[in-house]
Length: 274
Ligand SMILES: C[C@@](CO)(OP(=O)(O)O)[C@H](O)COP(=O)(O)OP(=O)(O)OC[C@H]1O[C@@H](n2ccc(N)nc2=O)[C@H](O)[C@@H]1O
Ligand SMILES: Nc1ncnc2c1ncn2[C@@H]1O[C@H](COP(=O)(O)OP(=O)(O)O)[C@@H](O)[C@H]1O
Image 1 (cartoon, rainbow, N blue to C red):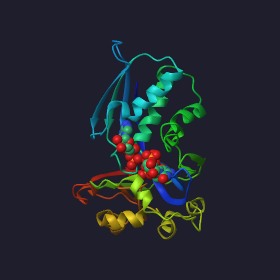
Image 2 (tube, rainbow, N blue to C red):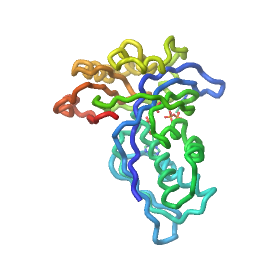
Image 3 (cartoon, helix red, strand yellow):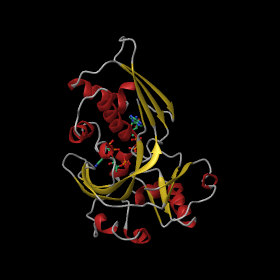
């Protein structure tokens, strides 16, 4: 069985307060986009090992047991009978990009195993398993636009359609540590809620929607700020860094021709939005 875990972007990201456990409460909108990995699971003929993992595409650091698809399998296996499996993962979503690729693989693995081995898990049960493996993993179970609060793990569905718009996504070869990005933030409550802002036309977002990570990340990496400027120069109606970076996206009313030639060696993709 094969499935295609997709990425997300953050529309706005407010870091609201630091919590006693060291994490931060935030407010953001998670929006699914058509940039996908491919994840295939087949029944393993031999039972010499519970699973094998084969990763192609963008290289991933870490041992197989650290991979979130393996963690999802191991977690479900504690409660449900499952045979040995072979896992094939093709990574296309850049990692450390603020696009939630690892979290999406994790959630789609849970959905795939549920279907393949008829585990009869409800959406709520699958969200419960996903939430144990990462704050934003559960978002990818329903995979619909949400206003997210808490540490990025409490979801409220929102009605928002960017249908007819185009997304240009650019990921420079720069690594931004999420932990370090949080360390440079002074949390504050936003004056206007993101829920209010997204009800307005995309053209207005430029003046009111903010990703709180941008100030410090742009100061440290002016190349990322330059990508955002370039997206506006190309005619974006709204541009922003996604999550804690380092990817940056622009939303356009028209498709951009030969866009991959405009950002040098960066990973660059154009997609229609839903
Ligand atoms: C902030 C967001 C917004 O989308 O960034 P991106 O991952 O998308 O860039 C995510 O919620 C990130 O989620 P995720 O990438 O799973 O973060 P984790 O690995 O759980 O956390 C990495 C580190 O970031 C800090 N952290 C993370 C989430 C949070 N709400 N408060 C925090 O302070 C903690 O120091 C933690 O050790
Ligand atoms: N299947 C996976 N795909 C990508 N990253 C994974 C996966 N499993 C574990 N990871 C680890 O998760 C971390 C964050 O990856 P990812 O979710 O792609 O980035 P981001 O949180 O910036 O969107 C990386 O350190 C990576 O090694």
